[in-house]
Amino acid sequence: MIFIRKKIIEKIKKEAKYIFPNECCGFLSGLKNKNIYMIDDYHSCKNISRKPAQEFRIDPIYQIKLQKKLRTISKNILGIYHSHPNGNINLSKKDIYFFNDINLLWFIIALSKKKYSNILVYMKKNNVNDEFLTCEYHIKNEKFFKR
Ligand SMILES: [Zn+2]
Image (cartoon, rainbow, N blue to C red; front, side):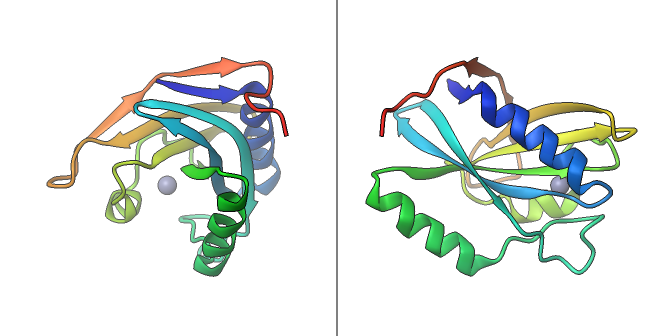
């Protein structure tokens, strides 16, 4: 079960439009308890790919720094998001190649004509083969945790 704050959905959709025709990317963080994901924050990253209109790459140093920062507030990276400016909601071949972590959710924001965006969430089924599940997510209006 996936819960995500409404504000985050709005912000990442906005970011996808703003960065168009390039792909935007970033992390989603929060707490996971067994199979329940509670996503309460997002962390936008610079797409460091040399072909940012066709793929995304996140600076690994940024990821390590973010992980450390989140650990100090007892949170974790729960997912990655990125946009598909070509409107395709499916995982690309490259996405599948880099999709290795079965605990990480992948949010794809597909844009069509820069105007309409659609989000689909993927999870890797197991470590053996490239099988993915699409997941439903539930939107929450409020913050999960008080700081
Ligand atoms: Zn992609």
